[in-house]
Length: 118
Image 1 (cartoon, rainbow, N blue to C red):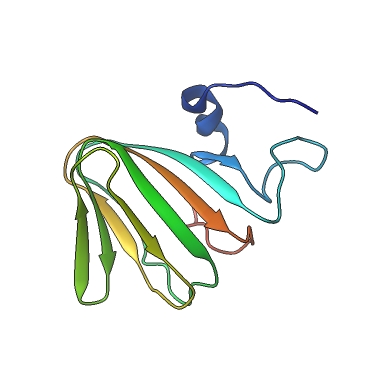
Image 2: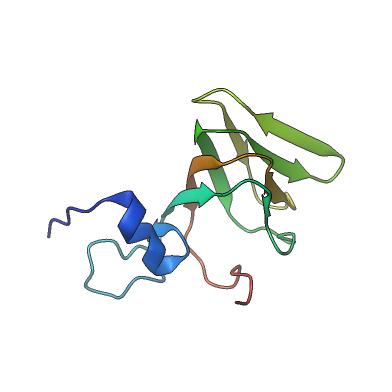
């Protein structure tokens, strides 16, 4: 099955996530192995809660703007297009967008339980 879309409108459906366990079975974007997110963040946007007890590995790539990935005792500033950070199991984290930013995140495996309540 082939799916063709655009990240901006498609991302609105699942809080930015384009691929992962949360999409319906039978949809070519459903996956238990990997999640992909197109994140558009307005200036001042901050994750509502820290992720604690992380059980996945993730890669976040800066597409545009400036984006901060926060870890206990360390903030990684992504400021140049293509800057990226990788973190893994056990790495508590949060994020902050000091200015408008677009990021692409890939996480694996795709497991439920990490969404901040609406």
